[in-house]
Length: 69
Figure 1 (cartoon, helix red, strand yellow):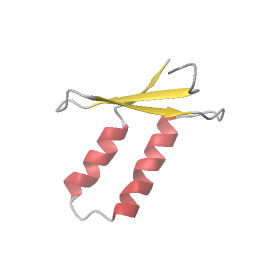
Figure 2 (cartoon, one colour):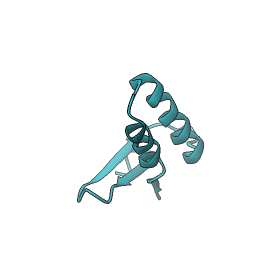
Figure 3 (tube, rainbow, N blue to C red):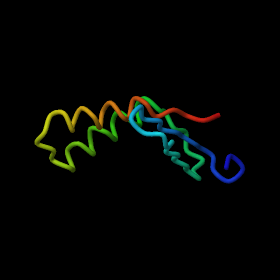
């Protein structure tokens, strides 16, 4: 996968046996912390979630995304 995609990320959740992979074919520099924190806040606004626990689970999930090197 690294031969095709410049950036690979994985997300492993405790309650699931599956691992989610994200692949980007971009040459742009990805700053993990900034990118995912900002994206989670934008997603939260777009979804207009009324349940606080659901909002927090989105933010928590973004902190578990890791760059594969």
